[in-house]
Length: 246
Length: 263
Image (cartoon, rainbow over all chains, first blue to last red; front, side):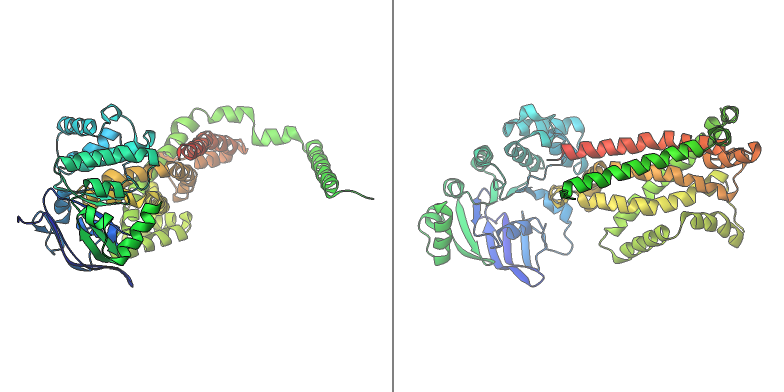
């Protein structure tokens, strides 16, 4: 088996006395789609945020594309380019047009010429179905459209792994489908993805592997059909019973 | 007598109106309007103020204000970033600076920097404009710093996280993402700071400015001395209002608009 694209070793994270991650070991292969499920407060978002060091782990190591992000000498701004992140609240830059949201990192971080950046942005916006909204501002878009722009923005830096932090949780139900559709296409194109989600349908149909977290540890992991349809652990069964009931 | 609470309130309110109108009427009858008008708004004195009050005094007030504002804004931005920095010495320095410069009256700061320092050190201000504008900017910076800090803190945390997740450094994210959004938030309060600064320039004349650097307030005072009449001060006051009222209205309008625009 080739070297994993993302590897977490004995990852710990505490906020004061609150020990949120209690020794996580996880590796994700290139092209793999991993869904992380679990009750709120289980540490799944914190885990994801440790992968691009938005949260600094209190212990353990994080490797992405062969680089140890937790190493003292790591240039974290450079290392973060290997990951793209999509947030629950979209976090589009409200003072910039849709196109500029996608190109800002290309122009300011990679020092790309505006014309070249715009060309790349237009391709990405077409890909998420928003080619006609390039000149709009985020406030003029629906939540689902904003989230698709956020995906295009993250893809602009050509990351080797995409992190989705409850990307559909803030959306009205009828808008969830469009965003999940874009995510599914990405998965089909072979993008490596770590997806924190409550969408069991997505996890079941798109994920290569599902992990269930609770209390800061990985309780159970395996094929989606196994974890979601035939969970072994009591906590997993209870969680899924609650989620699928609604 | 049986009255409802509402009727009693109406009676009291009517009484207050009646008394106020009576007092105003008395005032209007008893004042010698001719004498008052002659002392405060004598037409030929009014005419004598122009055009110098605009070409020289107003011009100087605007120069002091703009120097003070640009200097204060740059300094305020720097201080705000220092106050939000992770480094303790920066935070401490900025907090101390802001506390001191906001805690001492502008008049005292002006005198210390404009007179005290030159006397103590033998150094002299190279330019009479700078002598007034620099202390003004140093004080404005302390006030503006707090406004800018509030603006930066009002930008949602997720904006910084999104910028960092795209590979931007902290500084790059501040410059391209956070500060532009903070400024949109603080344009109305910043406009009000600008208005305060216009009025604060009236204190600069305690430094004994030259003929060339007379500001509106000093121009009015000199006019009073020359004409033995208060009209020049009233005219100066009106020129101040012509500057400040449009700006405060603009700030209020922008504030209303941003409230409507926010979802």
